[in-house]
Amino acid sequence: MIRLFVVENERLRIVDDFEANKDRIVWVDLFSPTKEEDAVIEDWIGVSIPSLEEMEEIEISSRLYVENGAQIMTATLPAHADGDRPKMSPVTFVLAGTRLITVRYHEPRAFQTFPQRAEKVDTGCHSGDTILIGLLEAIVDRLADVLERASTEVVAISHDIFHPSEKKASKRDRDFQLVLRRIGRKEDLVSKIQDSLLTLQRLSGFLANAAIQHKNPKDMRARIKTLSRDILSLSDHASFQTQKINFLLDATLGMINIEQNAIIKIVSVAAVVFLPPTLVASIYGMNFELMPELRWILGYPLALTLMVVSAVLPFWFFRRKGWL
Image (cartoon, rainbow, N blue to C red; front, side):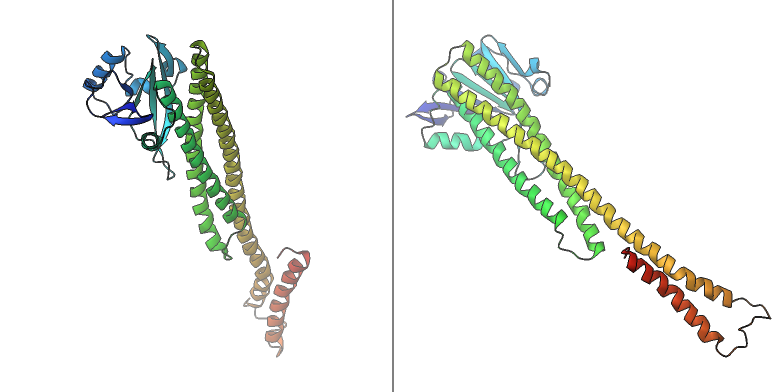
């Protein structure tokens, strides 16, 4: 699918006819393009459009390069990031003169919100390079929103770990199992955002060098510099969230160990408390013919008393030591 944009009245407007608007088009958005669509755009700009396999290459030379004067830049972006399982896929930006071509195989939110906003208000996006900067700014804003939501949920997880609402150990164990799953999902989300920010950081550096070489206007270079700082700050925030998630993971495992140790301690104390009464009962349960207390009228009460006392004394000792 191809979306074509032209500039009218200081705003972006989508058009349908490529041939009729060929000279006015400033942005071409290729979404899962066919070979025929790729061929049309390649003939138009004189640059090869990378395939999905080429876009997925991780080396910098395959993601950031210049071909026939056009700057070709690829970054990994998330889509459907409102949940904990965003779809990650590469997006390529081809800046050929005053025209921008984007190639993607999924739908990041910024590719919906940015054109809608640029159609309604003047965003200063009048050529391919300004559209690219505006689109990257929208992408970074979206990543910031995702990180803010993840940070809020990490705070909620921290509260559930250190201030559990359940009093029973069995229910707390079930809650900790759920917390572990939540921590795993948040770690996966934040790590994917970190990966996206890393690719955007490289892209912004490449774009900044190109702007200096081409002697772009100062305001353009200032916007690129601001974009790079925003990406760097988000990357630092994502690293902090990763450290906090790792801490919460260790804390959850520690809480589970404490709960398990408490259960084992109770079982051990119970075994020690009932061991002396069992010994007394075993002695007086022997079937020897000559036993001193066998015909004694107080033998049975004495045995019961010995069993109770031998159970109470260890229990009292453990309580005195603070082991219970």
